[in-house]
Length: 252
Image 1 (cartoon, one colour):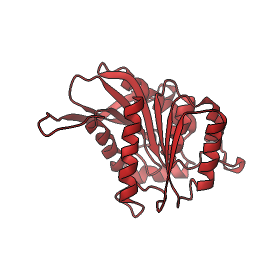
Image 2 (image 1 turned 45 degrees about the vertical axis):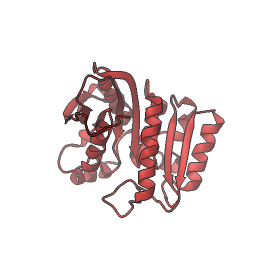
Image 3 (image 1 turned 90 degrees about the vertical axis):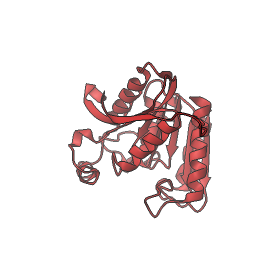
Image 4 (image 1 turned 30 degrees about the vertical axis):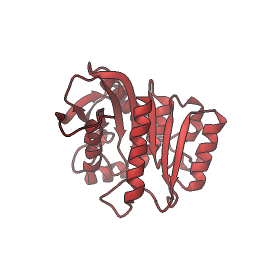
């Protein structure tokens, strides 16, 4: 993690770029990087169900400020354009985004970062809500993920009744294929995932001897990082961000 002092030069570049996603589809993504020669580690941010929104672009710049090449692909690109709210409505009416599209789009973003001359060769993934689910899925199914941070990933544990053609396998069933260290942050008051589902998730990680670190926060529910919503919990969010950056600093 970049540690700034008041006498240092600071600068970053943040812009929309195009990356090759699943099946070679060209999709747009938000990319932010610190100015300088590097080398810098990379992070792919997997946005939440509310979409490719201002909050996630702010999170992307936050990583660039801390010394990372950060990219957030628009996982809803195939549903057309408009305000994030309008696009989300289309996505929900279509039954959500397909897991295979997410895996392919994130893989393309990982490859984009690794191809940059200023990348140190290591790339992690992070996401919250549905993006937390997708983060675990990607860490099990994509290639060359070096570290993963799952923030309150709902529907990692799924019943057979919840499976659909777009989400044909519960991510927990891929646990044996987890390819990197995993950090998970959860709230005790969350209903998706519930503490019981988190415990089940953890048992599978133990079963296969995976390297992981889970933290369950009291007095916190779903989305406790989201400062623009009633779910925000300042103390838990500050501690959570510290854990995120410490984790990525260790593995990237």
